[in-house]
Length: 243
Length: 243
DNA sequence: ACAAAAGTGTTGATCGTACACCCATGT
DNA sequence: ACATGGGTGTACGATCAACACTTTTGT
Image (tube, rainbow over all chains, first blue to last red; front, side, top):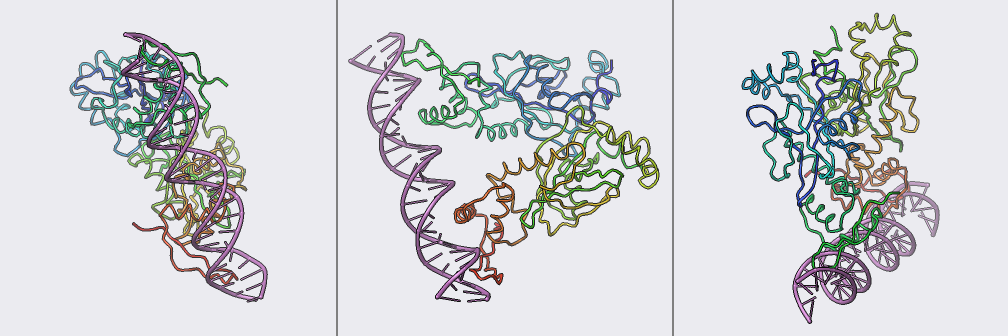
C-alpha cells in the first residue's frame, strides 16, 4: 500500500499542530521524536485526504495523536516560504537510515520524492485537557510526549517558530475569550484558572480582581466546595455553564 | 506554452484576494467579470509558483491586478472544505464556451483537468488607495472593476462569503490598529478618516471624541489647513507620521 | 488561638462618552 | 452679521487596579 501520493493526499500541503496541555503549573506541548537516527523532534502533523476538509483533517490528526475528538482547534497561520522543504533534512536522514526506510518503514522512491517536495503548512493550535489525552505514536514515531514549553527539545524545520507563533496567537485570542478553559478538567477552582492564566502570560495577577473579572464573564457556574484537607477556607469548584 | 500545471504552480492551492478601496463614502471591492458566457464574477485570484512564497504570490497577484507594489496585505482565513471545487461550475462553463476554450483561451484538456480539481484557497485581503490603482484585466477577464460592497454582483463559488469574512476580519483588526489609513490618499482631513470608519463599521461616531481617539494614537502629524471654499473653518490636513 | 488561603467590599485612577462652548470661513 | 462646520475643554459614568477586611478550614 502506497501511503504518500497525490491520489490519496493533497500534494505539497501539510498540517502542523501545536497541541497545548497544562498541568503542574506548566504549559505543555505534544512533541514526537521520529523513529530515525539523529534525534529528530517534530510537531504532530499530517496531510489532507483528497476528499477531506482542512479543519476535518486537523481534527483527525489530533484524534490520531491524542485519542480524543471534538478538540478545541484554531488555525493561526500559514507557513509558506519558498525555501520551506524537507529535502535537505530528509536527504540527510535518508543517508543515515537507508536500510530503515527500505526495510521497516518501507518507503518507495516515489513516496520519498513526494515527501521531500516543497510543502506549505497550515498551522493549527489545539487546547486539550491533558488528563484525557493518550499520546499515541504513529509508525514513524519513536515517542510522543508532553514537553514543557520552556524545555522543548530542538524541533525540526520551523517547528520551534510555529510554537512561538501559536502561543502569541493564543494570548491574543484569550483577551476576549475564555477558550483557555479547554485546558482544564471538567471542574476546577478559581486558583487553578488563575495559575493557568499566569502560566500562559508569564505574569502575576491580583487574586481578588482576577476572580471578579472571570466571574463577570458569566460563563462559570459555582458548584460545591472542594475540601482539600489544607488548613484554610475551602475553595469553590466551578465549571462551564451549559446554556 | 502550457500555463496551468504542477511544474509551474503548486497544485490544488489558490489565492483569492479581497481588495478593498474607498471613495465617495463607500467601501469598494475589486471584482473581475470573466471573459465567458454566463456573467461569471470572481475575486482576483491566482496560483503560487513553485519557487515563490505564499505572501509573495499574493503581492504579485495584487500587483498584476492593481499596478501597485508594497500593498498592505493580510491573510485572514483558509477556505478548504472537501466539496470546494470549480468542477461543476467549470463544466457548465465549458459546455457553453467550448469553442472559446479551444480557440482564443486555448486551454488543453490537461489544463482544464488541473483547473477543475478540488482547490484549497488562501484568503487574503488588501487595503489600497483607490486613486493609485489601475484595475488591470488578465486575459481571462472581460472586465476588472470596483463595486461598492453593498452592490456586489453575484460572485462565483464562495467568493461572496470571502468578502463577508474579510470585512469581519478587517473590523477586528481595526480595533487596535490604524491600518485603515492604507485606504486613504497621502494626506486627508479628520472628517475623511471619520467617514471611512463610519463606512466600514456602518455606524456613527461623535465628532469630537473620534478626533481625540485618533490623535491620541500618536500616528498622525498635522499639516497646513485645507481651504475648500466652503463657508466654514478650514480643516487641517494630516498624514502618517514617518518615524 | 492561630496560620493560611478564600471570598467580598471599598476606594481611587483611568478611560470613553456626552455635552457645551469657542473659532474660523465665505456669503 | 450669520450660517456652517472644525477644534477644544469639561463633566459624568463605567471600568479596572490597589488596598483593606472578613470568613473558613485544620492544627
